[in-house]
Image (cartoon, rainbow, N blue to C red; front, side, top):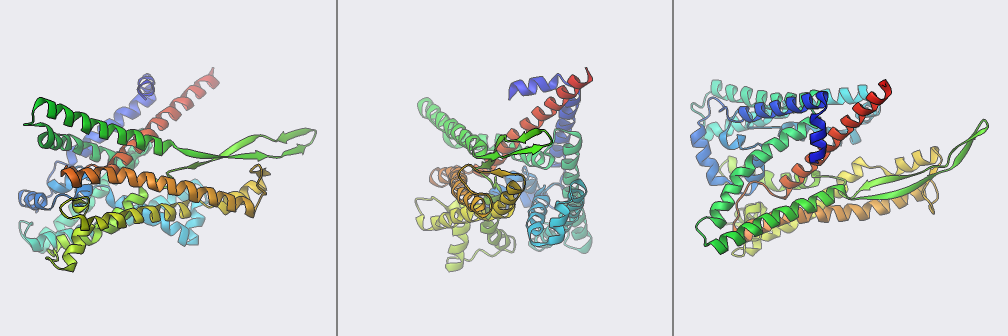
Length: 438
């Protein structure tokens, strides 16, 4: 990785792209410190500190603390992520969108344009709900129409600006703009989390206990990162053989290839889906001031919150963890089913004269791919579950209340790996062009 970065800095075009990306990162962090007008930031921060953990930990991480500070970037890039997922699902359900996706670059531009409009619409809805909810709770300086409209406009504009920055990084920077915006926010919270862990487990302890705690914390983080790297890069290669064809006097084809099936086909999407479903009722009830008390409703709400899982004092709430793991596995299969079509791949292979050795072309090939895919998707879902459970376990047993977790690590590692690959591909294209010009 360091060799790739060192080599990239020697190329002016790539160096300029990296500098541009870095400057955009600075803009993102500066915007995260500008408070949203009409909101009493100090009062809101006090409320947030009383509700931190559980449903709000992940949201605090992906917004880079902007939600905690209630800055102009409080919504962060979450409306765009949600709209992208919605468009991906609608592409499968609506033939017109599916046709656009198959139209090449023009179709993708149209879908991207629709995604932007959906993003702004979602940002408007979220900012409206937040403005009214915070106004009723007394977190606005004045609860009137002007303040509500001001908050809605600022939060929506902030989300739109972050979306624009992400697109500019993709076009003029090193690529993966939206993902980089997300990672910058997550990484910005890590120093505070490390400080929390230091104060909780190392500060004030004897030298031996402090060193042991530090070694254990570093080992857990490193092992999780290594496991995520292995999970992200793992793939099953299905061999494909193409039959020879006679064209004129020449024999063409006959080469061997393979179909790469990633073990973690859904990436971090299954975890995000599962977390969203588990946390949505909690967030809504918290914002409207409903806690359920000590009745069944209150116990269900507490069981949905990650902060109550793996707690030795209240093991019953860990049932929520079991539901969460089931959702992760279910969404892994669901997301893979809408993004990978074995029947379509089998048909394309048959048209091109390709076949899997030992498997007949057509339907048998599709059934074989489905069987293999179901197997590796389960392995990937279990791997995702392990990554997600590790921080939840330590948070519950040792009360290590930090904003980052398995989901954050998966996002960071995945984006870093993909960004390095983007830089390497740009270097290959540059050297290839240089070779042709000579």
